[in-house]
Image (cartoon, rainbow, N blue to C red; front, side, top):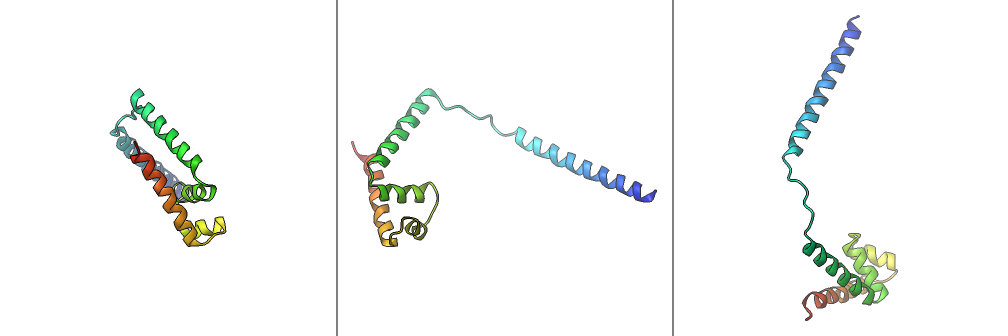
Length: 110
């Protein structure tokens, strides 16, 4: 019977350790601030900005847009983008320059 007692003791320790971990985790997240919903004004501003970005992307030539999206949204480097687009790294650098210029114009035009 010592094996059963040892097994029960291990199960009890496992339960106690897990319960303690869970309690600490719940205590730590209880102190987090409540999620906040953006105001109507903030949501309108976000929507307007997203629409501007969408328009800007639509106006870019295909390869420029693809390179920009791969870089900024997929986190790829120039060499990876060049491989996917089947172009040189210097072409990707030129595409990125054009895309960044388009972003700058969108932000600072007017």
